[in-house]
Amino acid sequence: MSRSLLFVGHTGERSGAEKVMLMLVDVALAQGRRVVVACPDGPLAEALPAGCVRVRLPRLGMWGQTGVGRIAGLAGLPVRWLVGARRLRRVLAAERPQVVCNSLFALPSLRLAVLGTSHRERARWLVHDTLSSRKQHIVARVGRGAVGEAVAVSRASAVPVRECGYPVVVAPHGVPIPPAPSRPASPQGSTPDGSTTRVGILASVTEWKGHRVLLEAVAEVPGVHLDVAGVPFPGDEAFLDELRRRADAPDLRGRVSFLGRVDPAEVFAVWDVMVSASTSPEAGPLVALEAMAYGVPVVGTDHGGTAEYLADGAGLLVPPGDAKALAEAMRRLMSDPGLRYELAVTARRRVEERHDIEVTLPAMVNALWATGVTL
Image 1 (tube, rainbow, N blue to C red):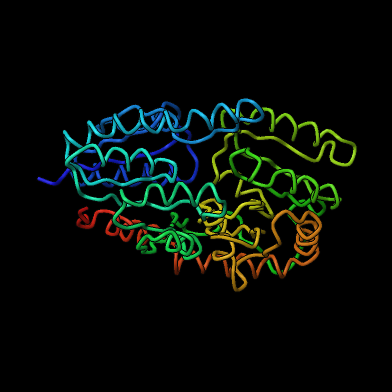
Image 2 (cartoon, rainbow, N blue to C red):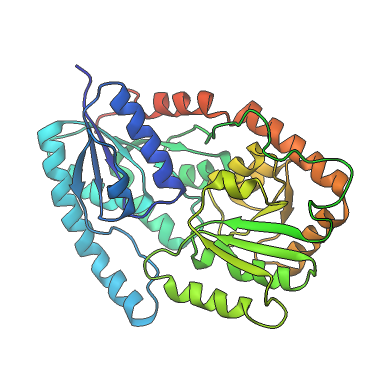
């Protein structure tokens, strides 16, 4: 009988990292494995498929707190890690599972759990972060003893993890590829209605995703309508309110729509350009690959996995946090239908060659399901 698998996540929210974990859970269940998922309450727990066992964890990271709330959240983090460790320890002792850690901020709890049990097989860490802050590096080093190997989703995310002392393999993200772009680009002609360019951002509404920068860029470019798709993490509701107020200023009024949660295929069918504006580097934004697969030209910030995906003509890259450069990129795409067409074609080919989920998901499973390394 196949051994059980334990997936560990630090948050109960659902973003790209949790979307990947749910796909891996489905694969494990289809293989007939017993699957245990340890995560906090929230949309992720609600989305778990029937057939897997859920272990409730406290929140093991921060979540949009500011001011005094942030100080209190940081002060309580070690306590939450200890509580998480006790609950994980019970699972390790009872199940003797293979372990996949899906979150950087779950590593300390996992390390403490391993210290308190005879379970000596190290976990695999699926790296969804490009470590760019001192805090992230500290957490990664704290968790080092619990992990036998890290599986990074891009070359960019692998580099800082190696610097923290982890052995790393790269297993790139992939996405389903539709039979054909939903609205094929044309090397001639203007935008579909002849006047307005529909630009979209599809991301969790939180500060580091770059919404502020994007709004300032759109304010500089007449003829652009911006769709903001996505919902805030708990604690980030005030940030969404701030964006709405900015969108109601005279230079943007009537040119910004807040869509909330959307079906990506529906918005890709009407967007002329998608923007990934993150001010901190992303390991590998799934939404950029999804847009590329649908033939939507992408403008992204020149760092992390985004730069890797959009290199060599698969998109336009701009410096992080640079509203003027982002505005200029949108102007280029508005004025040059041939460029939009070339980007769409190159991007679609890039996804077909490197990020087809029919190829990448089995490769990721093989990397994560491999025989464990013992302590």
